[in-house]
Image 1 (cartoon, one colour):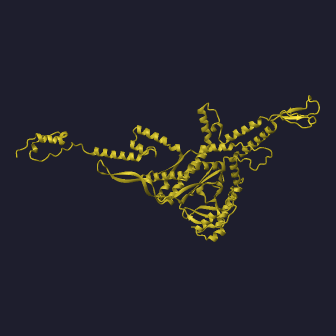
Image 2 (cartoon, one colour):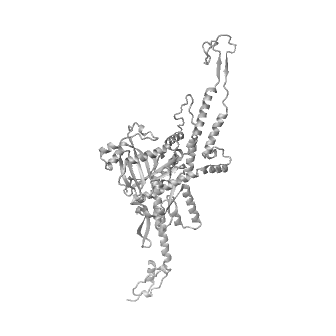
Image 3 (tube, one colour):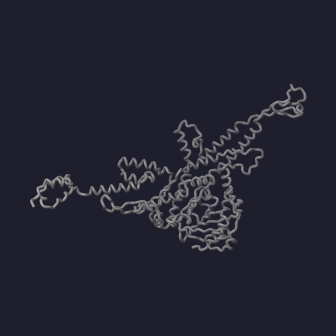
Amino acid sequence: MPKEINARKVWMEYDRLRAACVSFGNDFFEVVKQNEDFFVGNQWKGAETGELDKPVINILKRVVLYAISQVVSDRITASVKDFGELDQNKEAIKMINAEIERVMENSKLASLSRDIVESAAVDGDACLHVYFDTRAGTADAPGEIKVERLENVDVFFGNAERWEVEKQPFIIIRHREMLEDAREEAITEGMPEAKAKELITSDDDKLNAVEDDNPDDGGKRVTVLLRYWRERETGTIWYSKSTQNAVLKEPTDTGYRLYPLAWMSWEHIKGNYHGQAMVTGAIANQKFVNKLFALAMHHVKTMAFPKIFYNESSFPGGWTNRVGAAIAITGNPSEAISTGFRAPEMSPQVIQLIDRIIDITRDTLGASDAALGNVRADNTSAIIAVQKASAAPLELQRQGYYALIEEIARIIVDIMRTDYGVRMVPGEKQVQAMDPATGMPTTSSVNALVPFDFAALEELDFSMNVDVGPATYWSELTQTATLENLLKSGVITPKQFLENLPAGYVPGRDEILREMEEQMAAQAQMQVAPSMPPAQPEMPTYPGAETMPRMPPERMGLQGLMEGMQNAELPAM
């Protein structure tokens, strides 16, 4: 096992991988910067236009936003199940699903999903990093799993020719941190303060950001490299943190079986882990549209208004357009001394070509007028059919996005197995109480925090299947409607209907279920008890009791007993 790591060696690996990104075709970092500028509308950056205006007809942004809306659903769900479907794993699977949903909700993965799909469409790749924050959590559940988005320009794969995360020999993540924070972390790990100040210094390692240009921090930032790798002896993921000259965190075994990163490319490129962005191929068309529109605007501005030509020798004081002003001329004012001139109109082919380029670009990117809703709703069925056909080319990106979320779910389970330990989780607890009807002890389930050892997932995650889909895949409304149909047809009981309803649909569902169980238990006891006539009350034993007449059971109350005693013949004393 590695006992130490060389900071200079890690920095050399980082330099080599960064140079590989620059040497691949166009400068990858410059491509990402250009794509970001064109997406937000900064499309004339660095252009010398002279007197030309700089119009922006941003056809890329709407197309990208349309693609994002087609790939990302309103709500994404990950469901875990056991391949073996063993009974002893049902409670663990239920708890895992609840914990995955909680982590996704706390990490705002729904809103984060739109950002990562946008990054993939604009930059070419998207990356999510999952980590265990020991400073978060509660006393009952110390530590919390968090998910953060990383820029693709800050992630470097050890094997740049493969995009599969789990097949990488190592992965380096670049962070820009405040100088004092990096030094404090090194001191916390045991480095002397003087040595930390000597080895950890600010640098100008900038790729496509301007963080060092921020006057508020004085440019005192340093590049910190987080390096993950799979150790062959243990088969687990190790990590370290270092700067150019110092090690902030010595090699540490995380215990994870998976790299805590999920990667998605918009379109894969052979021989490179960075993908092709949706925006990259359409930038040339965007430039052409902007330039042509700028020339058309310039023509209208300079040629659309009539011009006046006048005889300069006849107007010694010059020409004026002031209303009611007297104009002094030389010569006969009846002669033609001025005339109007209108330049030829601009060819309509210019505007037609602009419209045509815009339409072709959008159609090529999969965003036709029907898909964007730019058509009259004369035939609704045909419009819906065209919209579905237009969304078909984005199916590969949608499946890639689902694969990303599935990988996130697997990583979350892997971290739970390693870092959670024994903690209190929401579950059901069996409690005993006396049944007031029967007087017998009964056992019922109540919601409570129960301890669970997450190390038990050691074997379970080997046979785990993860399903990912939009919220409509497990739609709560669809599930409720199906349960209602099953209840009406008699396939399930009312108790099963309540148990399978989505949480929150019926307030007090647990109390209702508990009362139903008590009623069912009471009815079962009544059915099991033999059908016997009601017991006759014991007759009083006193002299002459045998001579008292027998009365029906309904008259065996106190009043009946008194009547019987009055009518009875008592023996003489």
